[in-house]
Image: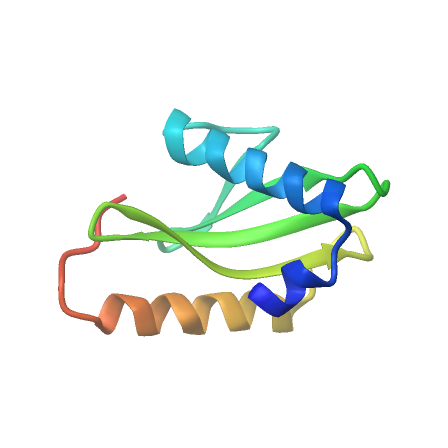
Length: 102
């Protein structure tokens, strides 16, 4: 995910950071900023200054918000392969020692 962030403009990075912080420190938070997906997976919906939409998929592990995957939306529907990556990473995260909470 770090490589993905490094490709964005400074303003876009700043917006994504602020939106993630709003979710992290304002939890629980709902639409329009945050939306549940399934099985403990959530998305941050960031509207970027570059007039694009970003989605940051995350879950909670041991009480911490963990960003799992991110993408720039190019279509109305989120591509299945993007969700598959996020779900697989979340599954791997849940296999780590510790307790998962939402």
